[in-house]
Image (cartoon, rainbow, N blue to C red):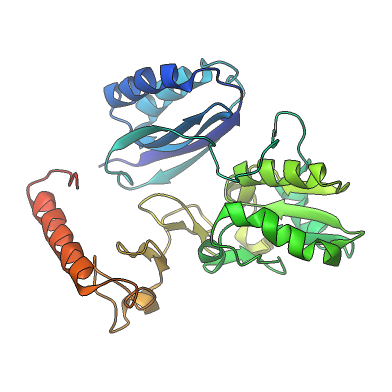
Length: 301
């Protein structure tokens, strides 16, 4: 298979009736053999899809024609194979779940810092750098010296901030995430809380890695992504991590060499989290996946 384009995108724009967008959008994706996941909500659109260059361009043109989406943020990378099994278009309450009322990135967000200026800006003594991602993402890579809120979901970020905000009094707050979408909401949240100096990395980590030479980079490790690649390295190629099919955690080569790791069933991190009955079902699922692969078909379970 030729290189596949992986397109990540998001846009906050009011959709009065996202239900009307769902079915035509899924049809256009299927027509052009696109796979991936797209979320729709009243607040906008968020997705990652993959296909060949021509078909991705066709679908992107369709998305840009949706109400208010002409200037949608996108990020492209390459992969040697299709990183998704199927195409899903889902309706959600939020395109990235924060669970906070009155959040509206269209109203106001923090000031963007371009990747070329990020390292210099974040090294200043009056700047605090916060990683807004989940702890399992941060474990495999982050910026040197950044703060890890140690949260397991974005919904817990506001609670973490409320608990620790006094530590950052008088500081400039610089935040970052994978592609920028979580920082749109977290910066709006902090501004609503009365924080004056709020900044975030434009285009997120993926934009930084694309535009920053590794030798000059302040990034350490790999970047977690929400598809079958699991992680990408500094060159935005597939990284060294794989995903535990039971718990979804990213696993390093060392993790996969652990005696407690069983492919498709459990890893050392989750081996005690599932009953033997659940593990038996996981083994059967893995068996069916392998059989489907031998037949050249996608496993739909």
